[in-house]
Picture (tube, rainbow, N blue to C red):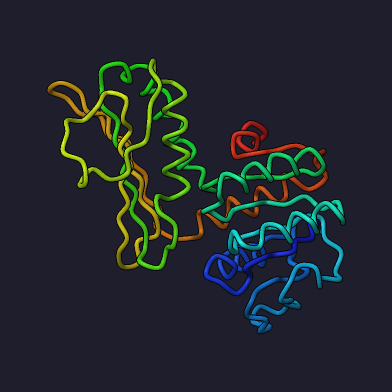
Length: 252
């Protein structure tokens, strides 16, 4: 039985994860952490992870980048692996995650959906075949409450494509302020925020007289929650290191 501390437990993703865990027999949530400390789901909720007294096998974090320091400090002190699902980390925080992974097992992914990770793999393959002569554009759409733009997933896609292109690429986030033709080295990244869109990502390879499009649409937050819970069960007991969805898929 994998015992979980859930950070961001009273948010929408926290509720989705709690529902999935309640339907499984191989894991349970022993404590939650949230700025809203109301006991909504039947387990003790703390304002800070430092206050948690329950013993756990793994931490799932779907909260806010500002909590990273306290989560990593707790994980190292208690030697508890952590699933870091929060998006919007700075470059310095990503560096901090890499350094901390030398001391404890950390699972970090900008998107926990199996489908999205397949999209990334397909985009990487398309870049290998088409990238030399096709322009690459990425469009991501999310609900109007999402704070960060572009999405962490869009950046994951762009990074994977960049690694396969035969030239050094750069990201172009906004073209309205510059009047010039598109440069070959650009990967355009565009963000849409509106309504209750859960998450949509489209990768466009635009060539001469033909366009190849790879797309993924999440219909509910459940796909991300299920991925996070699967990662928690997978990471429990793992040695120090930085893991991601590729590792989980490889052992599935």
